[in-house]
Image (cartoon, rainbow, N blue to C red):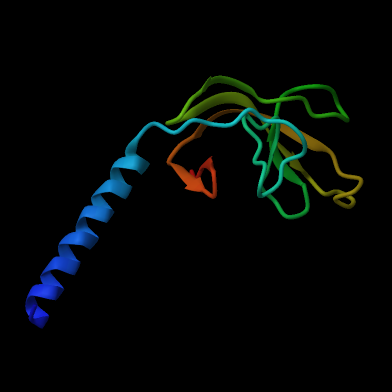
Length: 125
């Protein structure tokens, strides 16, 4: 077999593999049942809180009380999206972040774009 034919056969085989992989990823993902603390190997399903600042001064959670945060409420959680409600809590860091006061702002959350990481799916947006 000459080099052009070998290259064409390899390209077709690679395309078939890519199509098969795309079809597998396009299927609706399933999420594992959550047990134990979240980690890279055990991501949290339906997170109770989402901390998005490095120091914990800003995060999403549910209402609980003046010094405690509650759990987010997820009305939809499936292989394509998560829809929830809760509050954005922001620390005013006055006089310091450790002694500041949190303000609560109602939010609607949407998790989307599932991606497979290892054997789990995670929402990337």
